[in-house]
Image 1 (cartoon, rainbow, N blue to C red):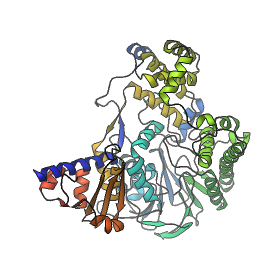
Image 2: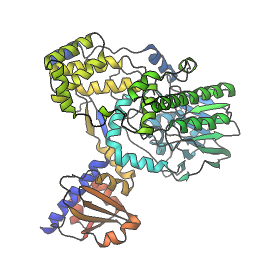
Image 3: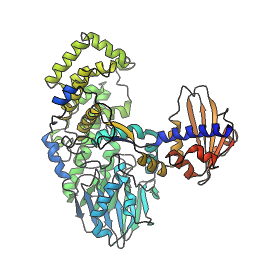
Image 4: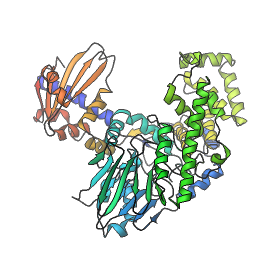
Length: 592
């Protein structure tokens, strides 16, 4: 009986950990169960299927990626465009090839591998280069290797830590917001593109085939020669802090990663990302343009050819970034607030009309807000914003001011009918904050989301509006067991335990003072979790082997694969304990 009590506790712990590391995916249709739509039936019958308008410029931008094709750059560089959100680049060496960026999924990588087959059938992949940590660049690597084949994976030293952090700390919310940004589940007749690619090739059936980096560097650059090809990997922080660009000096080809693409740069991503330093980005482009490349191969959109054209394009790009930065800072120092500054910062005509700076992906407005927050944080500087009213209190006051719920609904309906979708949305959000099921408010919100989407030149904004509208129609969040399993099996043990600490019930743990230590015998790693004062402190490896281990209330040992299999629900925790695969060497169920 005592053994069973302990096993139940272990089961609870590992299930909690599993919840923290799953990959959340959006599903719709395809036989999946869906909750009822929040929209009134009569509204659905008359409005929900109306087509959403599309700005002509965004529609025409799709030609950048369609049709999908492989373009040959110089004599030994080939780039696959249009097979997913990102490009994948193949560099031919004497007896093998190097793949720069590997797509967002198993499925996207297969399509690229097949497109590269005329070369891969003669020369195997001997190395990969990850230009940065974003999923659309790293999740297809192993597809390019035959069974049992190995290859080095080059990346910046910080890349692997950023990948692990995303998987363990913020994956639940950033994945949801990412699906909205890229429009994975937007209805086909409403979907246009994903701004820097035709679409994100990742859904609830997709698999990750990531390989962890094996070779990295921390300084400004790393020179390597692979199969007779001389490469210089340059650290060039921009869209991400770990960004590297790849320079082939012998044929003057520069692979720009995500520091340049045919759209205004995404200085802020609405899916949510760490702060992107605008001036670091501009300075990195200075490094790139001073190389005077004859060919520029970005990891999104089409390559450019010609030294003068490339230099001019990069100059405009870095100037636009610096302009937004400098003007934001100038207004910021004059005491202006973000909402004021976004109306004041407008690109000069030369930059506004550049074909490389149309706002199909990032926007000037979002960039202004990001620069402000990067320097001054969340507080606008207005006293009224220092301690705002709680959402429900504010909503109730606004509705009272507007003459009551029915009066506010009528005002919102009138505003939406006139095309003033933003104001109508703000009005109904007040009503829905107090009661999320008011039918007319729900219908008006849906109309506003689709109306706003139709005006967005940025694919990111369009897709976000349309996906949220689909969620109102019944699109739901579910857990993909296969994606959860694959994520667990490639994540470090420490990342999995870190995810577990973030799921602590703070109220239940407020008065606790319990320390559980884990020994993972395969990798010879030790970790301790100390629950106290509503937090769970994770102590890792070297430190955990010393005093924390000795003072633990409970000590647990198991092989690494047992832990992973329990987390991914391939193995029952209680049975693993009964079979001796999970060993509790110290502690009692009462202490636990």
